[in-house]
Image (cartoon, rainbow, N blue to C red; front, side, top):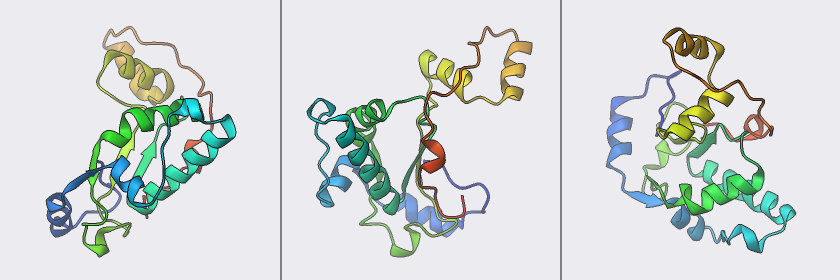
Length: 164
């Protein structure tokens, strides 16, 4: 979870948000009759359509993604299906209505370019780290991967939380 830092969250909103039970992403999609079959059963066109259906539906339920441009649509779909949708999210059906997609309210926000494994750290540094952070790591003596050009252009089209 990441909270919009442009707006000071109301402490009462945070308490109510944190008290809300969790549910898996798969369950949220199941409630909307959105099936997530294995990617091997889908053509590239079907992957594209299903991926955007999933992303847009989850956004209406307060779940957002960023840093996906290092993945093809099929890779992203596979990551969502196999890992991300198994994660726990605040159950949008149990959240107080005024906390779902209201500007300044807490949201479920997943940065898919960041992680704690050595591979994910290298990926973040290669693709997403600002030059200032890359230079700082070099000054500190770290051997960092070369800057890589993002192979896809999806992030700017992803839904964003209100007033994010």
